[in-house]
Length: 90
Image (cartoon, rainbow, N blue to C red; front, side):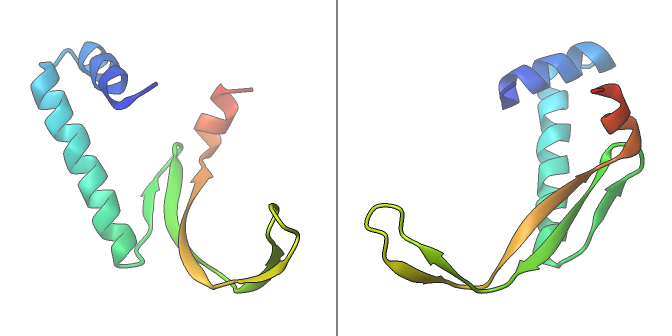
C-alpha cells in the first residue's frame, strides 16, 4: 500500500474528505519525524512503538569484492509491533 492508497483507505474508514485525511496523515508523519529527531519515543498502545536506537560500529565485508570494511556507528529508527497488531496478523 502506498501513501495515496493509505489516504484513500483512511478517508473511507473515517468518512472524511481525502484532502483532510491527507493533511492528518502528513501531520502524523511530521510529528513522528520530529520526535525521532529528538530521540523521543512514540507509543501507540496496541499498535506499536517508534524509537531511535544506536547501532554500534562494526566490521563488514563488501559483497562486490570481498574486502573488509568498517561500518560506522549510526542512529536508526526501530518499530516494535504492539500486541493487538501482532495478534491481528496471526
